[in-house]
Image (cartoon, rainbow, N blue to C red; front, side, top):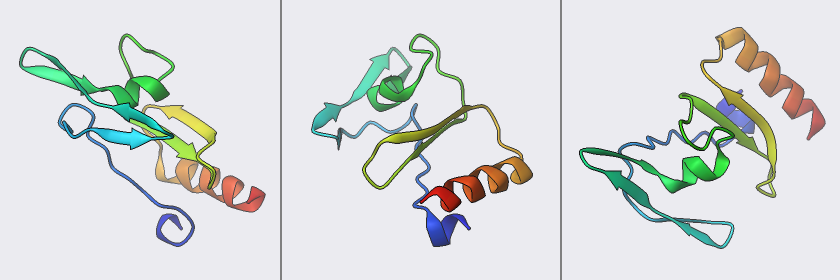
Length: 89
């Protein structure tokens, strides 16, 4: 279902150091000594000081947020949520 109806992007926020342009804004990597975090996840995260991983962000075709989920999705719950979203599109 994901490959047929969605574009899935796995984004490692603590390892990705490339600048990313999204919705006309530039997001970069914020280094903190031996670690860091990408600004893009902070832009999406509701918990700006300590984002929860995994973080699921589902956008519509116009890049509007339609689903936000912190933590793991069981396969059944993910399938259910994606089915609901597909039915609305």
